[in-house]
Image (cartoon, rainbow, N blue to C red; front, side):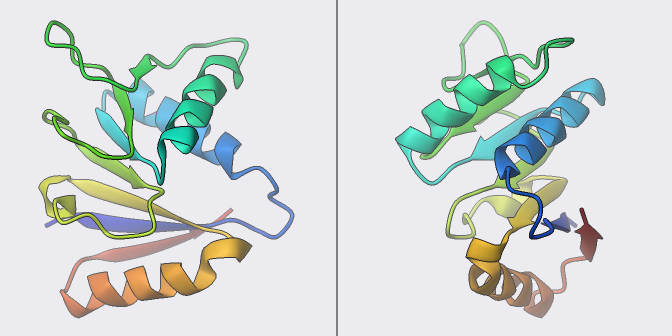
Length: 137
């Protein structure tokens, strides 16, 4: 069964993009293929840029399109068509995607701006019996 992790960002954590990049880097280092599901093409492009620049000492291979010749470790999309076989979904969209259960793990970020949405997502997963974990950052 898919494990659901909620990461609660503190009010002082003004840069959720950095947390997303760190989560992607950790997943990459652990050989977990990741789908970073965004809200829009603009957010996709923004996070694509952030993953290029967030750490001077390392690089997280990523792309906004899956190649037919190479499975991208971190795939960033707002409307996933082909996502391949991936273990981790980082859900930054406003909704819970219908395909979330095909992942081993789902991460939802909780910020000051999306607390109500996060509560709704939490209730959705809880009502369906998914294992829930909460992490304060």
